[in-house]
Image: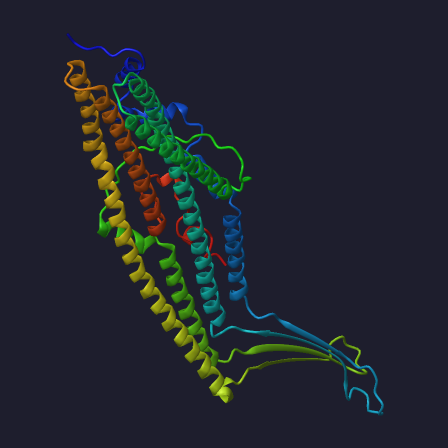
Length: 447
């Protein structure tokens, strides 16, 4: 006849056979998350971009840099002077000397150095905007990573508690069998050891939850202990990317490259302005004079102009040209180095994403289904008396361990994607959450 377990063993087997298998749990995770999630990643990103004080400081710096553009492009201030006779100690004929003189003067930027200085200021403002973008990308990257780690820690804690419950019941069964003389004390000690390890891991998961919450609150400019509900379970959403496409996106959108390009533009504009310092810019002058005994308001009206003579200070202007030539060359080398660094970083990050994509896909498509089939096979064997209770318990624990590894690999895949998006400056998964793009439509070029 078929043997039947009674007491705690029968209860535990019924729990094992009725529990949802890891493959089924993964398939329904999105549906559960959509109904139970109290906050989403989109909300986190929006609040970070809105409230983070470091981002506000970078934005104010960019706004300040834009105000330098009209200052650099402006003409030199006009000059005015007025002379009034205070005292005369000699006798002179009437209308021999002037008693009052009014003069106005304006320098004309005929060489166009102010336009070049404006171009350099425009490039500097664009560079400040790219610095803002980098800070935004980094802040969003940190928020996403903290969110993914928080979701994974909750999931790992949930699986840890499931394993702990199973081991506690197994320990009770083993202890009962030891009292009856059917099992040795080794099974009980083994179960107690595993329970202690699970308790230790539970504290680690709780610490990870606390750390991720603190990081998110910091990024959102909230008090560190502000409560946050459990986030949605992570979902595996493979992103179809290729290395050449990523390299093109990075070269076109990475803030560090844009900053290096703007620095080259600013250096080139300043070099052109230095070369035009040889060209004197005239100052036009208009004078109105009144003589000491004249009845008219203006006795005499004079016009004139003056210029600087830079040709007599050749070493000064040649040194300025050489300085700006070297600064331009340095900026071009920095741009070349930034491009090489970008391509290297993209290659490394691409392979990291591909590695975790492979791990996650393998667990989802093969290892999780195999673990489920193993549990089903052990159940069938137990029902036909070909295996014992311990084999069912071991298969279920293995399945939960496989599921734990699946969620861990999925978290690392999401983190790798977030780092890749921050690196290239483009959101590959959720464009609605992306940070502002280049400043050409943001008023940077306006005078």
